[in-house]
Amino acid sequence: MRTLLEAGHSRRSIQRQLGMTYRTVKQLADAQTPEELFTGQWQNRPSVLDEYKTYLDDRWAAGCTNAWKLWEEIVPLGYGGSYQRVRAYLYEKRTSPRPVTARAPSPRSDAGWILRRPENLTETEQIRLKTVRTHCPELDALTRHVRSFPIMLADRKGECLPEWLAAVRQDDLPSLHTLAAGIDRDRDAVIAGLSLPWNSGVVEGHVNRIKMLKRQMFGRAGFDLLRKRVLLA
Image 1 (cartoon, rainbow, N blue to C red):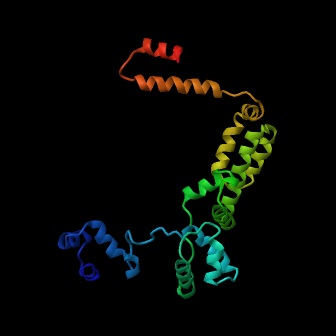
Image 2 (cartoon, one colour):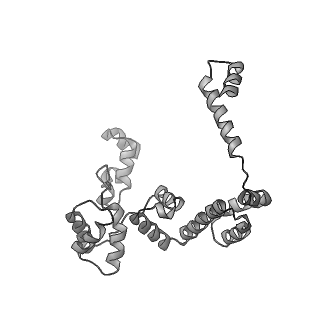
Image 3 (cartoon, rainbow, N blue to C red):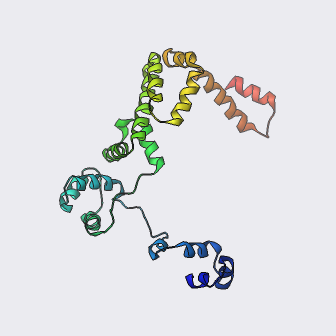
C-alpha cells in the first residue's frame, strides 16, 4: 500500500486495482503502525471481569498486587468468574509497557448511575460511580445537583429552589445553566409546584386514557363511537 502511494497512485486508483472498498484502502493508508489495524469483533469483547476492573485498579494503586487476595475480595461483590481471569489481568498490568486500566464506562452507564437512587445501586456500581466522580469534578458536581433536586420534589421543599439555582450557577455546567435559566423565567410557578400538594396528575391520566382509546379506534370508527367509549369507560 505504501509503495503504491509513494509511486503516485491515488487511493481511488488503488481501490480499483486491488478490488477493495475505499474505506479499507483509507484505513490501510492511514495506519502508522501495524497495531492500528488490530480491530474487529474479537477486539474489546465484554468480560465478566469488566465491571470489577475499576475496583482492582484502585486496590492495585493502593499497593495490593496479590491476585488471590483480590479475587477473594471481588467474589462477595458478585464476581462469578474464575481466579485465572483475575490473575491474567493483573499479570498484564505487571508486564505490559503501557498502563493497563479498566475501560471508561459509557455515558449511558454514567447517566444510569447518577439518575437512580443511591440505595438501588449495587456495591460495584457505587464503587464505579465513586471512581468516575473522583476523576471528573464536573460529573461530581452534576451528580450532587441532580440528586438534590428530587429531594426538593419529594419533600415539597420549594423554598430551597433559589439556593439550588445559586449552587448550580457556581459550577461550570452549561446544560444545567440552561435549565436554571428556564426555571427562572417561571420561578413562582415552579416553587408552587414544588411546595403545594395539588398537581395535574389526574387530568394527565384522563388525557392519556382518551389518547389510548383514540389510537385503538384509528381508521375504524368515528367521533360518535369515541365519545361513547370515553363516557362509558
